[in-house]
Picture 1 (cartoon, rainbow, N blue to C red):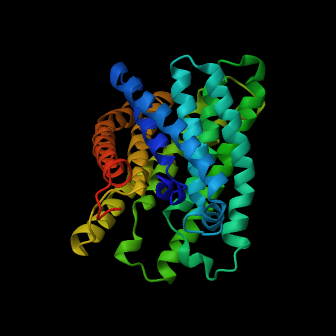
Picture 2: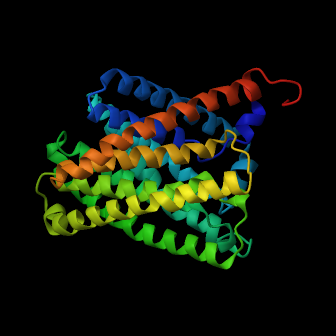
Length: 343
């Protein structure tokens, strides 16, 4: 257990993100029982990971510091923000408005802090050079965190009408910041791919977050379009609506190259496919793409987009089930009941 806590991946909150977004998709399709089950899994995972992360900070500060200065892992800390907000949105659907508001406050404040701390410690403040050589798909989690704040703020606006202008400003602000961060992360990751050799073992699951970040930008835009009138929303509604459609198209376009990359890694180069916490970085984009299609189809009256999202949701459900079973098996064999060889 101590070894597992010390080596805990800072991006493990992707488990919460994945369970939460698939639960939201099932809720939108009126599969209430299945949605509630995944919501409970998301709540339990969030509580456990908060406990384990606090334990890690208290007992293994050197390991945490090493992660904060490693540009290939540091951006995984943003999964805590996205996980908090995705879980908050799902809880709000069940009537837990106050809990969702607390999670939004925690997520937004953490986003503001880590949004400056992580780039400094992992990119500007480290002596490791070249930093660009370690740019990978986890850098897009920064975008996901920003857009998750926008989604949570837009979702809570109808509940807290006395704060509707503030929540509208937060939603539009974080959505816009996330849009620019996507452009920056895309440039850095593309530059890394073009300037440095890419080994099959380095083409890991977090590259799928590039599609997930694009999809959550769509969800945030669709939620902002549905918000009550406020100065920030009125000034940007038309632009946000257009960019949401463009973002959905680009997320759709990303599917073939991401699938081809997986084929090249695992079939062409025979890299074994075994459980790793980064696999949740595939499940989350699949679920977010499905929800993006549903929300965009409703907000912009695009039934075809909504139908694509509803069908793709079952791909996300299947992926979640496979990765969850693999995770349980992995935890059982390595932590709860390890064999002498694994120990």
